[in-house]
Image (tube, rainbow, N blue to C red; front, side, top):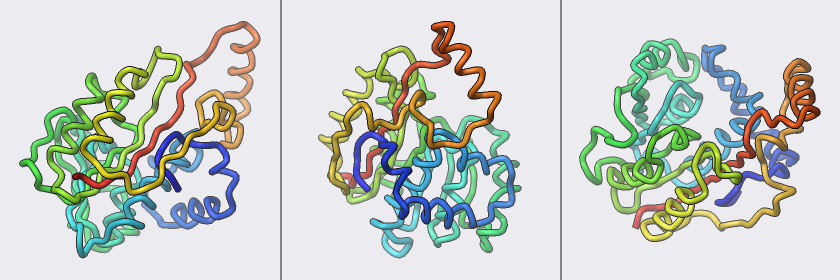
Length: 249
């Protein structure tokens, strides 16, 4: 487990298979979020982010956790089941009702997880008020990814954990641009201490949208992609996933 770009080799690892299987067995009471086990990158991102938190922090020392741009995903309920106090922030107010329907089997104490309406670019929290801030593939959906990361750092206590993953478009036409990505990395290097070694992945090993043969896909989806490829039309730009686990200076 390292900081840096997602690698398809990770998905071939037997230990990774066991981790995904164990997390998949933690019943969440919602078909809606079960898709993480079939998504081209979430099958890597959620286990990575969860392990980065659980391996480096505990509810006893870092009890208050926030998710920036939460949507409805397995992460807060896994962490809440472990004893963390998790608050998810998102502008989509429909998330609250969906949160309340989700995760019941793995959270005997519902007070451990709650949803609040909040903007990733203007988190409704005081400076240095939380122990861990994380975001899983939500930063790329904001108008200002650099500001979204800065907000997470603002609300963190010194020594607090920052864990994030984001889609980076190495072709420069979608998701977090290369320029914004470079600014974010520079910002992280100035304001956090990396908790994991940083690795460098060769292009052929990158986990990208176009290189996702290890992830289950429907035959219809594969056929559509092959037809578009044959016609010379790319269905989507070449995105790869970047992940970072650090501690605020």
